Length: 378
Image (cartoon, rainbow, N blue to C red; front, side):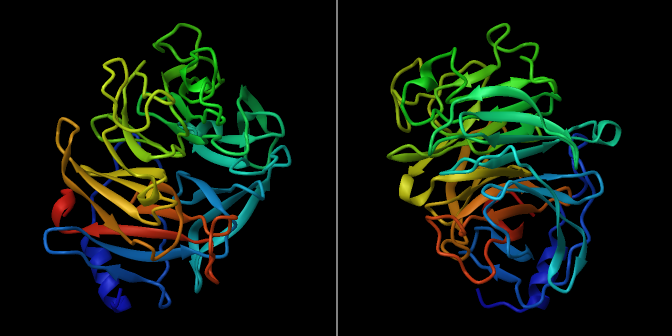
């Protein structure tokens, strides 16, 4: 971890990934000059190194992150129900952080609250933002124009003290995807009529999207325990994290209509009717939430594991070599992860919750830039 700020800035500047794909939104934020809070984590020869910059401090369990066209990020806080704007302006402390709105409809407890957030692909025209949130009786997906009224578009997603899901993202097909939890009883994930333990695919109005496996159903895939991260690579391959299982944490490649096993399987399965994970780890090393893609590398942000796992993938989507653990224990529990328009990854810590051990500046949002070695990143 010993590295000068100047060295980190040089590494960051040298690791440009080029312009984002056409379906990515936003412009690079005006990043602050770090004030002694940037560091570089080295790795064995052949592996990747990561440069870290702290972008924001003093947040309360930041959960979802999504970018606006001007490069600012919208960040949700799970327990307060606040939507924050981070950047694009900066000051001596990092990117500016301002409260945009507090959603009074949110009832937080356990791992429920204000969770995922997604920005409309047509934001310039419709100014619409989508959120995944908990009430006292269910989980919901709603939409709003910032500072306006929240309109529910999907209700009745099972709610419990744990395993409420919360992932929310627009796919490259223009439809909205959501990851839900099975609400802990282990039966809803296998019930195609329940919204629990699923990945859902919908229109901006919350209706089943054309081409879903079952007509008039929101369900895209089933057999999930707790999906808190969704992303796609440049080939439109879809990835999702799975946490909350007793034995293993999973990274899955999501395919239309497939069954990912819970609660029949925890990790890989020999049952041909079930889809095994792309990769799995012991739960103590993982319990991963956010997921992001940079070039051919897939990264996950892990809560119990307190690390980022970085996996190199081949053109056909298999894992090349052994996943690399980065930042292990250095920032505590890691939850949110999103690919930024400038080719970096933004990660949020989750140390202000009951299971965390917060440092004075927690919770934080950190920016990761990778260089060298095994993840196919230059």
